[in-house]
Image (cartoon, rainbow, N blue to C red):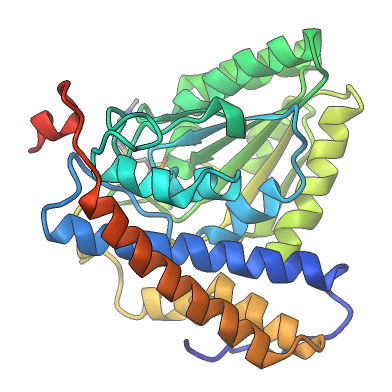
Length: 326
Ligand SMILES: Cc1ncc(C[n+]2csc(CCOP(=O)(O)OP(=O)(O)O)c2C)c(N)n1
Ligand SMILES: [Mg+2]
């Protein structure tokens, strides 16, 4: 992995064991996405894929603070959110491969995974759909367990009506909703700034919803912001909004090579790879590099085993996403 361009300082990570676990979790998501991409290019993954590589710090940082009673709505770029919530990676991989042993019996495919037992109420292909689903969950949670609903969505969803309607509804009723906008600079092939007026944070602030724009590549920054936002929602003060600045290291979907990106942009963001940043920070704070290497080697071996098992798993006897291969 490439070197970090900035010098880490010590005393940043409050719990080294926890962050070592987060490092492992982020490696799992990256390795999983690399595996899905390679299987996709071999024609083994049915339907399409939208990978989370580059954005790992957001799902892992927020999930590290969630409680049993909380609920999460993700997008079609949702493998990372599912894994961060504790979904079994083998089951998730089998789902990509449209197998009977998949998380949703091979019937959801890459874009629509859900796992109620892991608090994931759905992954939504409709841009902004996660906001509406999480609003419903927030209403239910306020009346029942007191948990918080979290919606992840992209910068593209900021121009959807759902965003304004749901945020207004939640603010008026003081519902426990945390909105996490993963601003990766593009909606498909369109630069975010070319279709979006003003600072998006200001849209939440206009409704007097606390809002922050943060570095979405630094998992400790994400955790600190998530702690504030979740705290606000948990104490009954209504919704909170986070805009996490990030970048996807791969194309929008399928085999998009991302040719619309200005030269050098990807490389500049890769210098702030969230996994490399965290590793440098862990080492700076005294975690043994050999231990981190071991975690990485183990992960590579585990993923290889997962690949073998997934490809050997049976297909369902009923129609699945496999029938709709495009
Ligand atoms: C309502 C709706 N309009 C259009 C689309 C087509 N579409 C799929 S992904 C996408 C881009 C969304 O970008 P963003 O919200 O920034 O998420 P990202 O893919 O960058 O994670 C669009 C326009 C859709 N799925 N839903
Ligand atoms: Mg985007």
